[in-house]
Image (cartoon, rainbow, N blue to C red; front, side, top):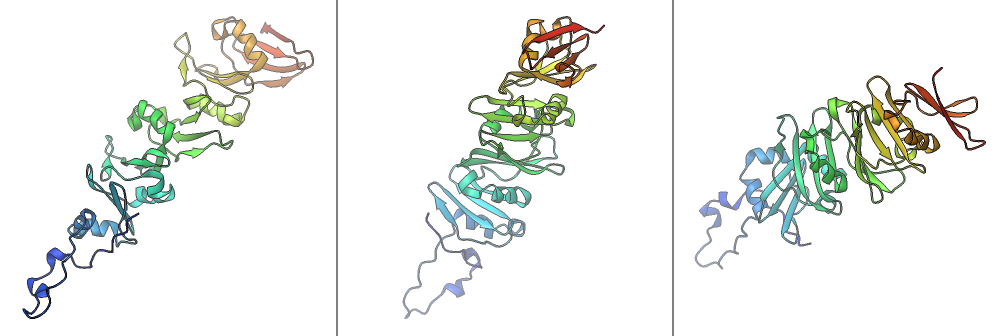
Length: 316
């Protein structure tokens, strides 16, 4: 990277003619270096200098981009965007996420979100790909990038059903994917998980709570393979999952949110799921005499691990 010298403490534009004058008999003065675009904005904007503090590094360049770090933020310059700044909590999150190498350059000054509360910056992308950092008083500054960011953008950014991010994009414990948490509908929480095998999907609200209770992606259900979907009756909601055995989690306002998998799910499929005589699940799998059972609105399904058999019946 090209490294430029630190800007002078006093802008050249403010130097007096007398200060630059030299006796006629002396050698002509050395040519004064012009300001870079970053220096020009910084030294000619007192409010910006107060916001960013003093420079802590030399101006650096990376192809068509130049950038410089300050005590409380950064300035970036490209021919297309001009000079853009980030500061305060967004700048701190930018630093913790790896700075320029990871996220690239800001494409504008900090912007106000449509709700008038949030603030955000978009970034050109480094090793993490195109990235965003969003801030609210309740969530702090959180970064979103990669496939999770693309999914979030498709769903309407922070004005869509996912709302603002409440965490920064991070790898899942098994190293197979990435995930972010969001405010979610009615502030009930939403998760977005992405892997190469399962794609990128969201889990939210009461179904998310049930999924988390059984271990999230490390539990029997594994990763989501659908977003939350409406059941055929237009009342219930559900997600499909990709564990060692296929699984589902269903929610109904009268039954709550519950999950099932394996042989019990296979039998419920044969009985036409919630449209059949059993209705919606009212319990998670639990141990009873004779095996593992899931309760439903109008009956049960029992799996016998000794014989591998599955039985079902109505409540007597």
